[in-house]
Image (tube, rainbow, N blue to C red; front, side, top):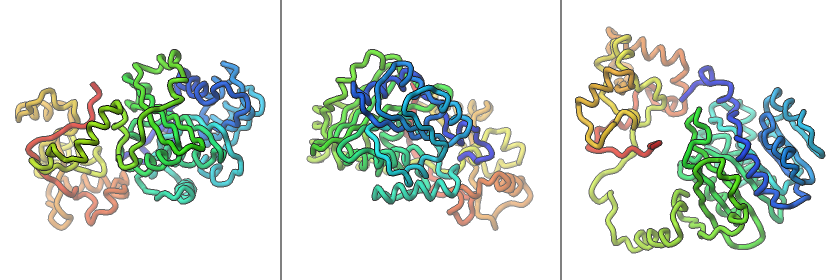
Length: 403
């Protein structure tokens, strides 16, 4: 967890701007030859979508753009487009108060954690979820409420949304109800992913989520993977008109749809007949340790020595880059230990059992001065610095690998 005082301006605003090929493609897909679309961009930044609308002379009826940041809204307002309205406000507030409805809603919503919202934004975002019949959680990111709110602003007889979203939408648990909402709300869903990172500076893998609702009872989905954003220029939008894979409303994750329909049917048959044992028959499988603040609890040797925390330091593998082969030995961990790697997990006892003679109390006070004790996961503990569910396993699966 990062504290508000540690976060960059871009992070607080969620402002990582869209590459031009992506903005152009989403607009081309969304407008699709129409001339009378009422378009909304709920977080326009400095106006890259507006610039692409102008540059490619795409036809539309009206364009409304919302932007929370004053300076960015001013930049967007200088872009010369007919029937354009720039609204300098928070999208959540706009969504809950506007009576306008749109044919197409596009953009790259901010990626902001709940704890970076101010109180009013939290309330307004919660109201959007209530209107959609969903439950708002403190784990929810801003892009989730942007997708839900935008969906509610589409016209009754149809409409499209086209967003740049974190790839985690496909599988993270806090987006599960969003996936179910989208699957039922829309009739056509297309997901475009990229082999290469679109935002390499922030190591954020993204996908394009392109959804359309109509008056049919069909709910289909399709996945397309491209090498990078430049391949969008040659991607025929006609490919997206008829997604073929049937939405499985019982499925918890959308990574399922990276497979062909034949492969999906094969796996569903196995799951239904249960003729292949699961790993749970041979092992107890659990998620890894949840510290609540990795920067505080996972530390390099220099921190151990600075605060005299040797009695509380446990050997740990924190990231996949610390494991360079299938076999990981004590010798490998020692290499990590004497490098700058965070190779130790701090395991503190309850407050009344702390040794007052070493640096544990000082280090815990340092964490409190940073506000780490006020985080969501740390704040619900009896002693915020005692990490629960610490277990030593016989094996591990690393679920995030870049290469």
